[in-house]
Image (cartoon, rainbow over all chains, first blue to last red; front, side, top):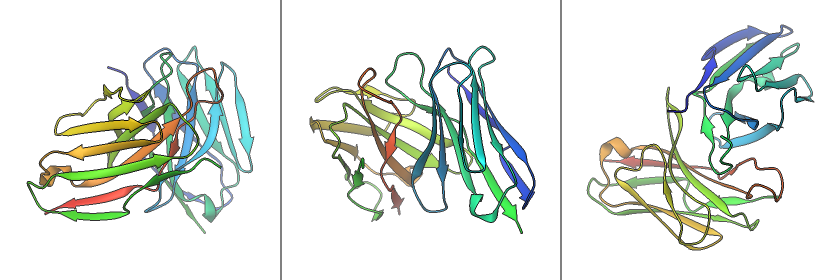
Length: 111
Length: 115
């Protein structure tokens, strides 16, 4: 059974601080996705990582992928309140037709 | 812009009713998916479809069926709704591998309450 594990599940951090969310998965895959979900809303795509060593950055968020370790990270730099949301990683096994999601990391940035 | 539209944002149904959740995408995507989202469990795949009239079971298909008669439309059917099917339902679509980035695009979600 394919497993996608995120940690931490809950993260409360102060504005201005840095932190990293981890996403481990149990299958062979070179495609990993990060999504953001605001309360009561749907999922919005943040990053698409399509190869080993891929790194993408957008504003205060940076995502990376290590396919050998089956690990992706989402690094938050100098957090601001607007980043408060739930973040999901999703893995697409090399069959190309499905997405398996982690349980999500609920991030709260405190002023 | 990719648009995935779910027919209802909120639904309240009675136990035993047959429930239809509709999803339409306008980007000619081959793949379509139905997920349910519950607190602490993340998103779990119910069914997906990679072509018209084709369907594959996901991780939790029991109590659900699907229909894809046209490429742009993917329907989720609860044959006899039960209270344990109260959840947020999310539809998504994606392009087939080789035609472009394969990320999934999501609809706005349907919050279903079964009473």
